[in-house]
Image (cartoon, rainbow, N blue to C red):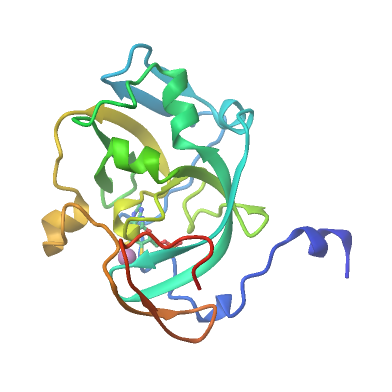
Length: 216
Ligand SMILES: Nc1nc2c(c(=O)[nH]1)N[C@H]1C(S)=C(S)[C@@H](COP(=O)(O)O)O[C@H]1N2
Ligand SMILES: [Mo]
């Protein structure tokens, strides 16, 4: 085993996972990291345009947790990023205001942008992250390079890959999948049986919908 191998955190049966591209509606578009910025705007005291180095400079948040797709599959992977809270605090957002929402917009490609809006206070309470690595390696174009939001209590369609901007707003706008397929605007993970790709069997999630570290 090489030294690199020991740093990569492997997810069992990753080859059985549905293709990331299949779940990337606008398609991935090459991003020049020199030009790329995450714009944080809207109801913020200080709008910011952050490059990836500025985001990586914040304390790292690591989670070995499940993401869950509304199409009834789930996978547990090693995510690394920063807490959404830490980025929004830099911009002076009132994280205790229950009337705020966060609109995420993807970088966009030939087929337009992908967007989703989530309830801000809930996402902060659930320790939502902005992830730049999965399984010990930087995100690829297909998995959302350079940055994706993950709220482990929400279905994956509420978590945008290849982020371009975050807008703090009071408007809970319909996002891509809510408009195209009538998916629920709230998007909380529902108590149901899901196919766990990494376990190669179905698992039951009950409770509030948030899939915790300690869960299967
Ligand atoms: N930009 C963007 N982000 C997105 C999507 C998308 O189409 N475009 N699809 C969502 C859905 S429905 C899923 S299931 C996950 C897939 O993530 P994965 O590539 O890690 O499987 O990305 C989510 N984030
Ligand atoms: Mo999905």
